[in-house]
Image 1: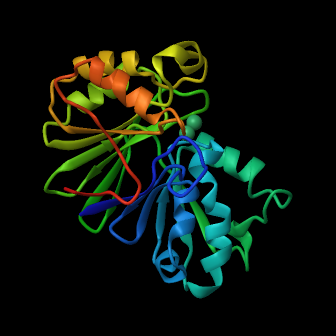
Image 2 (image 1 turned 60 degrees about the vertical axis):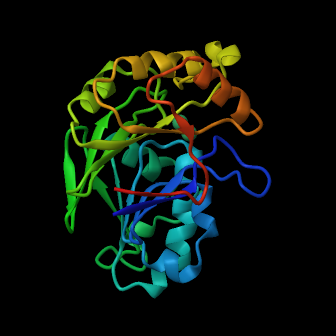
Image 3 (image 1 turned 180 degrees about the horizontal axis):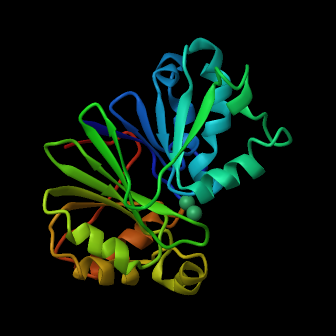
Length: 255
Ligand SMILES: [Zn+2]
Ligand SMILES: [Zn+2]
């Protein structure tokens, strides 16, 4: 199984900054930020499943345009998985006929372009030998992390989260964990902002990593544009035994 990084930045701007989206093999998206817009139309048509960590725009921005672009080309709906709370937000504030049409009833309710599938923390979805499970996370809106198990190994992606003991416990219960993608949105100078917006800064990340009893490769995502080197320098100075590396757009992780 391979995970291709379509976007992993905390913002936009320039040639490389795209917001969070990961392509699992060629038919599953984990978050649906602006990075999805770089895919060719035929690649967009192959996407059957989209798992969303939370409702913030940088993680959902491409869902409305994706569904509109490919809906007519496909014989069956794209399925968006998220917690019931997140799906309620998407229905009320995006697919509400005001910001965007309700594609769960286009062209009609029996053959829609889009369907929503609730997925609660602790629940899993099986997709042909691949298991995607929702794990706890702490953010300003209802949010989850995801575990993806290929049968050979496991990857966990934090989504957007503050320090979260329940997520740390879930990570420590994953003995076959090979990769951990974890956000660090702010520098230590912006610790107050990180706390208020329920994101991590380097000192909080290092504290979290020190509690891990497993030893995955650690990849850092959601770096604020223009702050990447500073944040990664502060993480390196924290001297975690896991030696985190910045995730980059286009990177492919096989597991
Ligand atoms: Zn967020
Ligand atoms: Zn975000």
